[in-house]
Length: 276
View 1 (cartoon, helix red, strand yellow):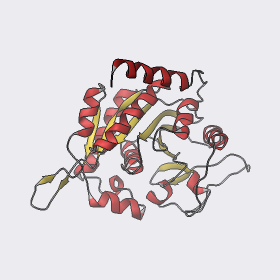
View 2 (view 1 turned 180 degrees about the vertical axis):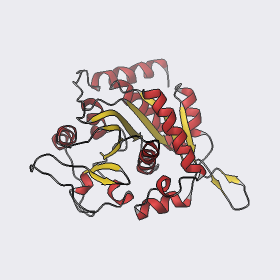
View 3 (view 1 turned 90 degrees about the vertical axis):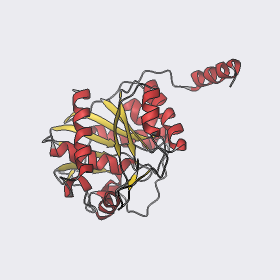
View 4 (view 1 turned 90 degrees about the horizontal axis):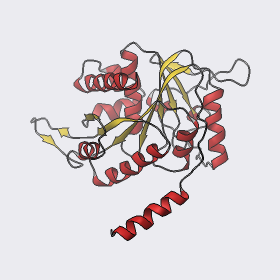
């Protein structure tokens, strides 16, 4: 790209980017809000969010998880919840408790086969419900599983909610790394601090002990270095991470002494130090 083309691109983005400074909303009953994001779908963002929430819980924090992936909420299945949240006054929602996590998801309100068709005002209304109408109970860390990509839904959440820090999940693939760059830029434009990058599906170790880099090598590490962002961890491919998610029994809860579970604890400790 020539200098002239680069300047034209920058001027175009500056013109269409939002200039308004939004008043961000605190979430009642919550001390710290951590957004788990990804530049694209299919990188295991929700799996990371759930197991990270369990890791914080294992560190003796009061933890909530909010499934804000309005286009494809998967948290209910991953933590094995099928019931609907209760409301004592018909207005405010009480989070469902599972694995000592306080859980809320748009997926609790609709059936699994109902398509999510959202327009801007509906996204804004959903955010107001999550910030004002959910009775979170003294939550130390609220983990938000954000919508994938960098579209309207993620932008609205980032502008409206007072987020203490964001984590970007990626895989080592080049195509995923390209989308990470967009995510980094979006969080910068909405004044959300980026806590770090988690590279998921880093490698697979076969029974003979050989490590296989199926999706490429060190993509997340390289992008973290390029943008001077901490690489919080590289999570390997483990069949039980997927299996336990499908069964609604989070891996880190079921295999507390496994090396992958210890890795999630290390990541949670890093985040705690950065955010406090």
